Amino acid sequence: TFKTGMMYGQLVVLLYFGQEQGDVVDLVSPVTWKKAMGIPSKSDKEVSRQLALQLFPELKSSLSRKKDHGRAEALLLAEWTRRTYE
Image 1 (cartoon, rainbow, N blue to C red):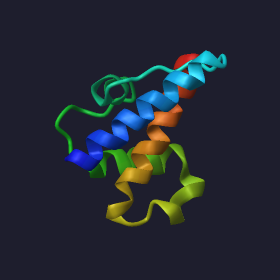
Image 2: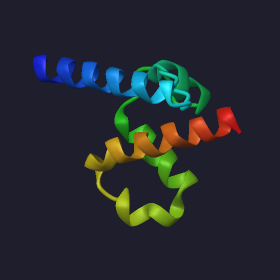
Image 3: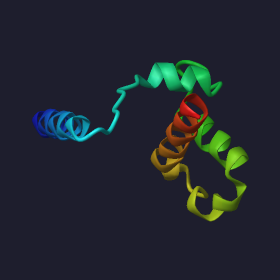
Image 4: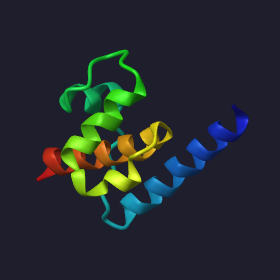
């Protein structure tokens, strides 16, 4: 837990300094982007993986295992960002 908190703090500082150079940073909660992407609340990680497979069929080999759910959620967050800020 301590290491996670430290990494989060380092990330926030890094993002803060990035904003000073003109980059825009928005922190979004998982509830927000998952709702917008149609992922039901309290659903398991497999739902995210299946949605990512539908949206990115060309990445099937990178999302083929159940433990690839983290990669799937990263793709879905990137897709939410693209849809939101385009």
